[in-house]
Image (cartoon, rainbow, N blue to C red; front, top):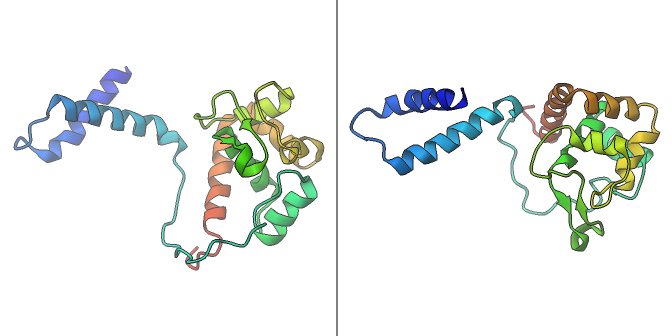
Length: 183
């Protein structure tokens, strides 16, 4: 089924080029991979509004939350300074499903999830399952479990990946538009 879908996508995408550019095996292989990845990521797409101006100087240190602090600090940064909501805080925390901390940059070491290259709801399922060797849980992550407003959202996102994706997309757009005049 996936092969048929990809071949259909390839033939549809190739037709605008016409017969003057016959496909080479390498080009077909590359197109196939790109189209397959785009199709697989289609459900993870979220809106983005380009146009914010780059700043000549780096932002002020301390703008982002301190990983060693708890819920009050998260709200000070995200709600009071940025105007986001509790739901936004928890949804954006789910971005920790990707990547890892590096000791030389943050003082912490390791990934939050077993598959740090996959964007899914595993950050929340790992958080609820407790500490595991080789996986990181920052104090600011653990704080989400102790707060009566945050914990139900962690549980919701652990149980419902689609709800996490939808709320993350909204929160990410809101965050990306901070300081953007046309938002």
